[in-house]
Length: 478
Image (cartoon, rainbow, N blue to C red; front, side):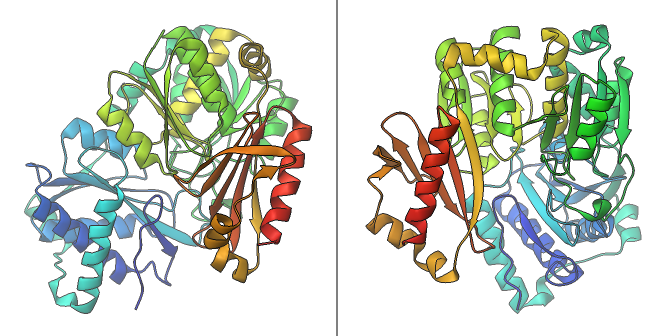
């Protein structure tokens, strides 16, 4: 029997292996039970969307049928949509929640399901745990799963086909300075990675006077044969276009458009850590916003240094955007920006969910206003804060090391790295060793592979490399 388990961002599995129509019915029924039991909204209405993956729209239709059979109105989107659009519609329409069929940046053989409750952010652990327990019950007794035909759902008005694109676009236009973008007449390269940002990111840029070079702007469930992840490797082609055609910047989103990929005018990849820092700096300058910035524990402390210069408070969270979203919801007027090094962010007045489209457009706005490269803007920041060198590495380890890693790292906790003494050990999410000079080392176990995810930050490349080398020796000796 398949164990249905929600990870950092939803339930994901291989299509036709564990991600099957039968299991989609089970999870949909479990979500319906959760909504009906918790009475989280008077509307009893859920928006159901999907990304461009294989069979995503069919999974969404099946889920809509199950919801409808349980007396919950299902708003089925007529095309693939960005995950943040789902979040916005939940809040705007005061819905009971939203379901989006997506495996985000996973390879094309995967699909997944994200559930967002009525507050619009990713479901918190207590919510997903309740859904998982309900799934177990339903697996043992499938007779409790309800279903009606698509035609019956439409006839009873329990299923309605919707296109919420216009309302989401309207909100984005309220958050971004498109006047500045239009005035700058930017030349922009866009890699849509065959994903849900199609017709959103490119359309907004084109409508506001940008000259575009667009690639991969059509649906392909195989995403060109790779992961729809806008990282440095996947965006090499876009980088060549940006450099060759002397464009101002390059922009991209992942499969469900909640993550971003940014390139400078010379085609250089700007890391998510750098993007979040750049946008905090920009928002503090252009909006004069004060209050709170939220970052996950493995995200750069450059954010803290910028925040300190502008009198902004920093809140650290475990890995997972739901925790950043929770801070945003509880501090709506103080919240400025929240982000993760994995490539997600949101800002004040928007949704408590990652938005790759918004992130890309805010970077275009910055380019338009500053009239210089991101590299030069970053140099301005370093004059204020000093240098921060941040790297991440996935270290493959033997299964036996994985099995004893947590106990061993606690029992044999390093006292120093590369001769720099450990000042503090943060165990909020994994292990984060804060060193006396402000450098730090992060370690988190992969939940699906024999990997230890390593994070390093210091004030020089040489020191960072020395710390990394020492860290790998320490792990090998566990």
